[in-house]
Amino acid sequence: MKHRYLKDVTTLALNAGKCVGCGMCADICPHGVFEIKDRKAQITDKDLCMECGACALNCPADAIEVRAGVGCAAAIIKSWFTGGEPTCGCSGDGACC
Image (cartoon, rainbow, N blue to C red):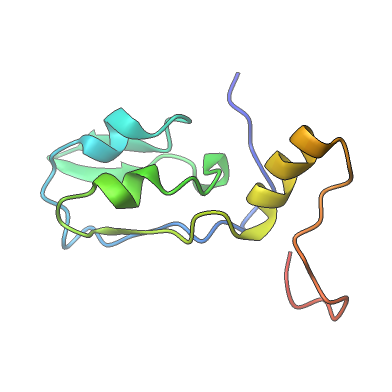
């Protein structure tokens, strides 16, 4: 079973024009966010991204952007370890999440 995080909050972005089709993102992603089709990477389900940053760090073409350790996915993961409620550091103005 794949774990989805909060809908439409991840910072993950793929520039398919830069992709060289090496498949590193698909190999390295722990949640199967990427697949290779027609010799290009594609995002299968953006909501599976936990923003770990492994894909961007290992992309030789700099075709992937993600701000690792930010956003609501990071807050959910942190809450698992601390046992607290997830918080993404919002100031209460409704600007995030």
